[in-house]
Image (spheres, rainbow, N blue to C red):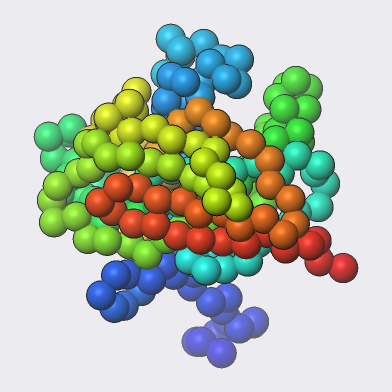
Length: 231
């Protein structure tokens, strides 16, 4: 037990770093509506700017992990995304300074209880339950970027070897520097924060037994399995 805590402190979630070490995760921010083709497939308006929501830090799943099929859904969907890892604290960050605040990048999967999300949205209720649940944020090993934010590269996801999603980072409506700058106006970014930057078109359902592979050209790749629901 640490200090005068009345309970043992929960473990700090981490993401492995390529080459060794682990990145401690403080918060997970996600960007909604950041690829035009995905906005259109979800029936949205491409003129609306992206928005931000959060997932719990302990929703992280590492490369090679297994995700139990979650409760309360019959439409469990995948969304492949570029992930940025913040390494320098700041707020109201200028676009020109954004790269200095990003330490690493990787590929991640924003797992979504789509039916629950849509029902909550239709009811005018927060749709956190559709996005922010256990095991909902798989993330590959982080790769230091050395001051160079990703601007292009194929991003794709396959289920059981079949291509489901494919796009390019150049298609981001908001580029990485804009995302960091805009988010830092709403929250003070702190080392340990992760930003999932949005998904291209092709989102779809997965079921127990599926094998999911996600990759971003020149950055990282990862695999997860979908397991039967816990009893």
